[in-house]
Length: 293
Image 1 (tube, one colour):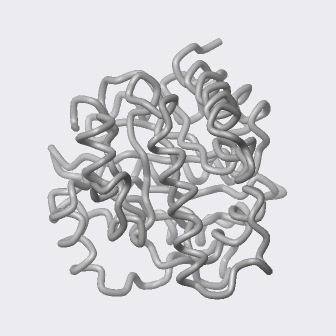
Image 2: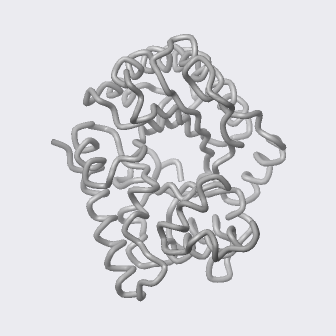
């Protein structure tokens, strides 16, 4: 898994929609909120959507390096096999697990992560379920240096606990694409990340997942940092074409898209239509991740 994550061409699929984002994801997929009567039914529907995507032929290790899963997915099967095990053993795709419990209210221009419930047991479960690494997200709303530095410190503090559990953390300090001073916020974020990276011990490895920046290649220096395995890009609400155009301008950065990956898929598609649409999307995301301008 480590070899694939470090060196394979391709991208990481973000299939970790949680309770808050699941209804809108399902609605875009063609399943309206009013047709779902319970949380259990909602999670069953979104798992069926994920399973359909993961089991489709275009979703393969030639293009997809890894996939980030929601905790509920770990306890469900795909074609009779546990989801994470199916990804790795049937598809050769590295499984990651979203571990955060959502966001706190905005303060100092950022939304920190909520305290993670049952964190130790979640990491123990991840180790027992073929999981290579984890992902956790917090959000920057404005270029507030105090807030950004607090957010990055929280991410790295939690990452330290994940590393102790022999898992590789994906650190995701998202800069909201509507941030009015986004470019300045990204400079502050870069400095804060650099300081935290330099405090890591030798052999402590992390993955960075960052919003596509306003200034191309602003994060490029991290690609050669000995503690960084890979730099991923989140689409953050950019449409697929715009996200890919931005990604192409950032060398050593590969996609980890969610909305941009799923956007063209619909519940009512036939298998042939679904596979054709997914194949087109995967090809353009792969090309933007691998071929740079």
